Length: 124
Image (cartoon, rainbow, N blue to C red; front, side):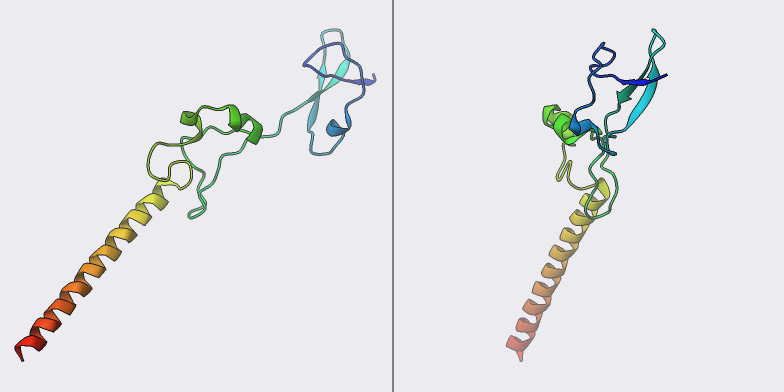
């Protein structure tokens, strides 16, 4: 039984596939129609979820989508509403906050040491 190329999801269009669909990247599966014919159905590529550049984790709360589909998604589906939402994972944000806090603490301690050293030098 010859295989017919199916377009427009089940329409009776028996044209050969366009050059864009004649690549190994375009996955297809063979479907038997109610009329008994075997046809190719072209499958979409798997959607991906962005990954955090710091931890490598997949970002939670973001809808898996292809780039063209991502343009049409609402902002709510493309990002998480917190600092660095949709860019960094929650672990990376937590790490950045702790690092910033510790750096500020270190600056305060150094400033305190410096003022104590100046006070001690002034008394002598």
